[in-house]
Image (cartoon, rainbow, N blue to C red):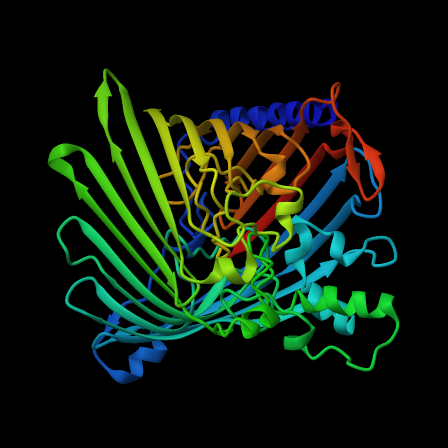
Length: 529
């Protein structure tokens, strides 16, 4: 705990001094807007957008290129290490070139090339032990061929727009919805292959419908199934292997070949789906509808997803705003209902995919993924400051399944890398934000700090702990003297509780809660041109 306190204090002191110096020397200085920037929610905003043209030739000549150089470094430290818990250090270096054509009679197209090279010592660090830093390279490619590079076509789409704000986009693209996100916090964004319809021509509303056939996670070179975990049967592991250690190693590698997201249901494997007569290439169908009832100061959001023959979910959220003096107060609530359309019988109620989980843990129905979540928050805003007090509860039924980088607890109790949507989990968070940007350029330091308390059910989650505290600090700023450059620093510390009353048993070795405490540190630089 001393490490994070000391480090955070030093960073805050440095940032405060830099901000004061900038205020004294460049009070009237305005930062020139770059062609693109990254917003606080990790989406790229194109500030210099393509124009509409009057000839087919200008469709190409008036298009725009957006370049980006990127560096991302990750350090993860456990209080105690063993075969399953390694301290790791890894950096990613790369960038992207995105082209967007001009718009001619409503038609346009775009493409994006992305590259990343992972820097780590393979003689020291086990590729399977990386946590946040795993997305700096493809673990699957590295374990298969030793390749630490990723060079991918991240975007390739055609689009057509009609009326004022209605469009249809076909191909590989970023899809920003409640259940799907680009989640561009590493080196390469999360993208999808499919069809997306979006309209803002409904008064005070936005509607988006998506049919997504394939997904390409951030650490994948090729697209893969949206809701299937790979195994030896899908990956073509060597059938002639007889050495058990080699067989086990190949099986671990095979799990990385399809959807290996941290929130993926590990029981929905190729073999299990085939045996149950379920599709292994089912699409993801999503819908998002937002409307603002200005006269009532009320915003309503509804979203859904459907993976045919497997799972579906519905989300409803409302936020009401009123003012008291200079303070804007926004109470909000969210409800999620998950419907089991056959996936529970295949993989079980737990994200772990352990169908024998009833031997040691107490799911009400191990063969059902029917579940619910409720959430509430109270947000206070005044000038550039925000305080968010929030609560979420995943009911004592089944784990929520959303492995497309959209998080059920986002905006409520979602902190960096905290997956608090397992059955019978209650989460409480207090978040403070200082933000002065209105255009995505953070001249002053953006500050986000939070404390999250999670009350878990270890009999459900398999995490082998009851509860924990998670402390988070995130800082971000565009450098005034180099206006296209932005730096980010994020740090989180997880503290497990009840250390004086209980011992844990992991792989036959006794551990205390303190041994599992961990520090997650990330530093990122983006240069847009």
